[in-house]
Each structure stands twice: as structure tokens, then as C-alpha cells.
Image (cartoon, rainbow, N blue to C red; front, side):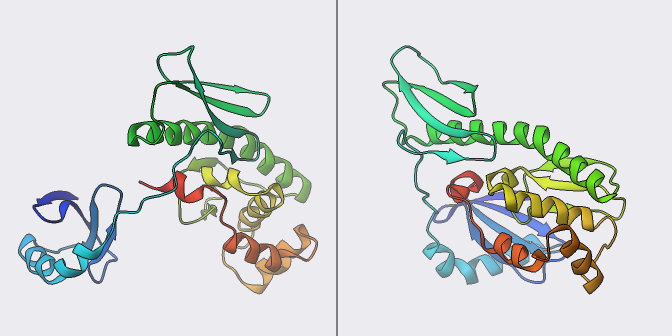
Length: 238
């Protein structure tokens, strides 16, 4: 990975990828990300960059909805909100009785990028802690109930999938899973546990998962695929 600065386009981060067959451009909040084939030379990049320049110039930075005092982000175990206070001179937080209070000094402008970043980072940190606390317990409970076995539980920040299971029976969950309704969280946990028996998505896998989900495995799968939590885009935006 390397970085270049273009006078017109600004900051460009170039990431070679072994599976990339072509150049893919994405606009992030403060830079353009280019994914290129693994052995792509800087000479090739210069040529492609000029060819793509008109399209890259049209890429607009994603401006997400800011998180303000009247807003709430709800997770399985807590609800987050911002409170401006005249009693403090720097940001602080308190998690009590399923409420995460993010205190900001009264004079601060919440719309400033650094304040939005602090709010987002704080919520992500608490989501990760709660995921590490709750999801292993859920997994162990369902595993015992259905006579299944797994090795380790790991929490990551994946934005592409809610969970995964390796051939070694290690289960990974995205911390963003905590933003789903509990019945869908339970489905994802059962889905990954089913993979400790059937690693693919064969009919045997769906039959097994149906046993765990009262015959609703495929229906729940579709719900999980289409569900997007409120404020999800705010939390995943780079």
C-alpha cells in the first residue's frame, strides 16, 4: 500500500490486491482509495489515473448524517446519546443502566469532524466491549443446548459479514452484529454454530439450521441480508 498526492484529486491511497483483476476506485471521506492488481506498476498506475481522472473528479465525498443531541443509537445492550454539559471542559462518557451518555462541553460544535469522530469512536469501543461480553455467552449457551462444539470466539470490525466460522471451528463475529434485533443476532449465532458441523451451505446445512430455528432458517437468512441498522452508515464510514 502506498499514498500519492494529486493536485486536483487530493490524497489517493493505492492498495495492491492479489485477487483484483482491474482498478477499482472508491471515494472515502478524506481520500480516494484505489484497489489495483497485485503487480501493478507505478507507471501503469500513472496511465490508468489519467484515463480515470474525469470519473474520479466526479466522485463526491460521502457526507453522512451527523449524530446530534436528539439522536439515539440502539444496540442489544445499550442506547447511546450525546449530552452537552456546562460542567465539563473535555469530552467524557458514562455507561449506566443500559444507557451510554457521551458528554460534550457546552460550547463545542457537535458538527465539527473531530467531535463526530469522537462520538463514533466512543460508540464503537463500547460496542466492541459489549460484543466481547455478550456474544461468547450466547454462543456457549446455544452450543450446549444443541450439543455443538466450537473452539474460540473472536470479535472483529467486519463490515461485509455479520459472522464467519473457520474449518477449525473458530467463530468470528462483527461488533456491528450488536446493532441487530436479538432474534436476528440469535440466528447469526446459530448459523455459525451450524457451520461447525456443515462447512458449506448445502441442503444438509439448511436442514440442520432449520432444526435450530423452528423451520425458519431461510426466512431469517433473508431478513439478515436485507436488514440495515439505523446509523450503520455513520458508524462504518471511514
